[in-house]
Amino acid sequence: MEDKQIIDLFFNRNETAIRELNEKYGKLFRNVAHNILEDYDDSEECVNDTYLKVWNSIPPQNPEYLCAYVCKIVRNNSLNMLKKRNAQKRSNQQDVLLSELEECLASSNEIDDAIDEKHLVSLINAWLKKQSDLSKQLFIFRYFAMDSVESISEKYSISKNSVSVKLHRLRASLKSYLESEDIFNG
Image (cartoon, rainbow, N blue to C red):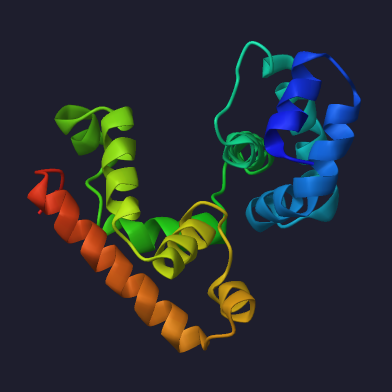
């Protein structure tokens, strides 16, 4: 079923919308949640919570890209669940990803002083649009879906070293782009 048809089901308050959404993208949603939470039961709970949020948000929202819209909700729900679960300790996975990206981004205080979050997101999106399809996918799977290098390597049938090198080059490219936009801590 096409995304537009699924959105129409939501607008018509037809509960089939959730089933169709799950059939089309459920595996991806669970993967995103599991990459963050690293727990099957929590991932399932998070995806179910996401379906409720989607049900309550469409309408009035009418997302242009249904998959991206719901993935963002899954990711935010997963991160919120992880924060609650690990109130005093940070996840090793999060630490690794943040350390990889911190060479590209200013500290959160500096970002707050220099630009607002939406502007930063629009800059990163503009940079991503200039990348090859493979580069976009590698970056999104690593830093949005929080996939491991090993998992990405398997998905694209390329060596772990090649994935690591490509991600390093992407971070360097992002850093350079943000420097050109005066959004880097130097």
